[in-house]
Length: 440
Image: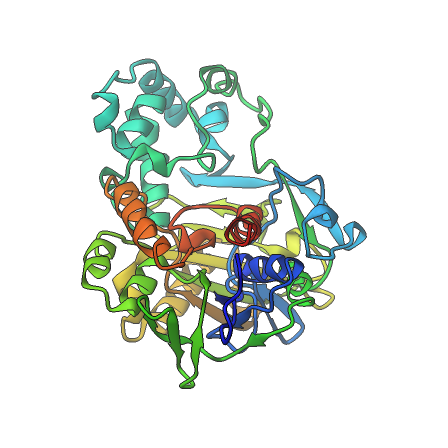
């Protein structure tokens, strides 16, 4: 692609993983892209807040690699394997007052006896169900694992996480992040302490010190032009220009935005795009981080994280980074993160954090997981666009939006630009591959 006089060539919106990776790939091709980021620091959701010696990530970011052997192999990141550790997962589901190894569908034998027997009987009687083209995510779960386990754990857990009825989601919501029905694994797990089958997240990588921001810092280190605390205010598709919150006007030959696709559509002011984007929905996640004096409660066992399907409890997951890396806390301390899923429209609810934080701390204390008196600091992160909803309308809407934007040289990237559920590795590669494609 030939660069036109007076144009910046490429403009990247958002300095998260996909945006930084795209910028690095563009620089490799000889471009000098403008990068605009609304936050005062790069990283997107792959950031770490440091408070009182604690490193708190923006919710549960663990590095799962499927296309690279180790962190050092990730393009442009400049990572050193010795600064990372490969960790075996220790995750559980809180069911019937007991911690059961995750995924529960492959550890039925570890459930309390009455619950175990009901799950096994229901599994053997699972229905055949509706036509494949009319399946919902709930149908997929019931057909795969039976009504009892679906209602006990799989449906409430996912509905709490995604903040939407599973009747509204298609089986595409599963992808590779939900363990699929595997009869051999289910039957093997009906025996107590049957062991854990290998899955995509059985092992993961995490920095030895400093939190997940180490990944972001590696990508950002080589970026030459990065404007921080500058959001996009409007996008003019016809003129190939965008205006920023600081009043700057940037012209592009190609625009690579990683901001949420629905937000991008509304920034264009294009009535057709806005109408299509109205079909896209998402959840909000509140992540409450706690710095703890001493060790966590014995009731948490050795868990790195715990799934909580009980609908009377507001959070869907509790995790501990200090059980993953001892380099995220001061000596003699621990840390916990708690995730609460909410509908996207609840992100601006008045007193949201003020009401949630004490409620969460009270429940953690009652469960015996965190003693109230041991909490020394509390930091909450509000992730307005957390999980995108893979509804039946999603595919056609995203296809139409991307086709229309592509005609104007706009190529969204990353998890939110593509309105998908992807890993950190996927987001990095999406940015790189898109940058290389549009400059080929």
